[in-house]
Image (cartoon, rainbow, N blue to C red):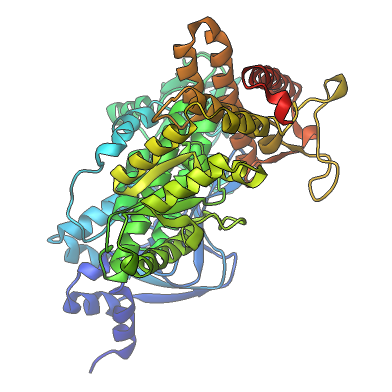
Length: 639
């Protein structure tokens, strides 16, 4: 007689990887042994240090957060919801759980027993690959039915070295280290581990490391009866301790652990066992950081088959960004990596939307990213600005062709919003018929903006002149770019008005060198770093690029670096502008990450004296570049 509950479980799990790779018979075999657990919100599935369960879990209903103590605070390092699996450690590791799994809402979990599951995967390579990648990369759904191929297309060369870049990052180590003396009894060490929910204790003498004991030591040397719990910990500790200085790279830490077959490293003041303890690195720390490896994220994006997967990957991109900022990785490299990951996300959404429409595009087209993404400067969660240009068609076919691309754009814009790119409040998105045009229509639009130039036209130009192709036929965007440079060449009236617009935000400092803050509204007394600092330098970079016919460079810092190359007599000035643009973007990014927003409005009271000084140095450069614009473009006549 069939088990109807098992049949229902099998019907559910077959919709999610890796179970979609099993036969119906094997699915039923697994489903018969599944346990069903109901948990209220904020209940633990397992906690740090808890012995491994005999099963891993799939979420039938609800949501689970994986949490870890970082700098004495419990931080969420991953989230899972319906259809996701977690708790894979029993498949790969022998040590206890190294992370907490907590329900974020009422949840129903399916527990899949290892004894039933393991024999069924030995001949299924696709399932094994999925499980290994899930555990190693901390990506819940890196698996797809697509063939394994190149991870990168020609546009993603910047990421070929990102594994190296990532592995050269300093490890984010745990600063709160629990220590004990060599005379401490083993039973008290176990109590300490249990109380703090940790897997190791450093044995120290006056905060100098002399040994380390892990939960593995307790299993091998105490539970087996070799040593008594009444003995001192000196009898089971590993000594000497493997020590490294602050700043040890991920790759160095990984190699050290593999070479010496250890799971923990001690961080000391000078990197030797003869100096004070300042932190500890565990194998799990490296695994968690590995989940935000750029190459892993890119692979996950290219294989993703749902908006939910891309949303989760987007969160990991933010974790990667936070790591880069925290470890002070140069902004130039950070921007390139985040741009490529964001760009790949948009591209993947477009690819999937075209498949969903189930009809190929009627003519060639290109999806254009505008504004900060077009300049490769979009790091935080900001509005989406995009447009479509498509091949010229006969008048009789125009609206039918446009309808196709508007349908595509509507789907793409909706999914971008779901992933984390907010809708543009000004509706500057491809789903707006005003921004879904043929090549000739776009040329006519740019002609209008540059010939009959008022305030609105200048604003539109400042947004649409910074575009980058994300998907489609590059010949269309190349033609459009050439047209822009053609109609702005020697167009002194337009360039002067564009220059006047670049001065619309006065110097960020007022009388007595005080920051100019918002006078009213929700952000009264806050400093608007976008309007008063970032946009003036961005506008200046665009103006110089147009007036000097600098092609194929949209990034603000790179525009100024090109100016330094073209005008070596003013090299120092232009390089200071490049530095300022990067410094301001990094400052906004840092504060946006800190407050979980777009970083636009800064609370001045929260700034350190050093931060204020750095900002004021940037503002000096802005004042200089604005004076330069006034002189070069005779702006007084247009203000």
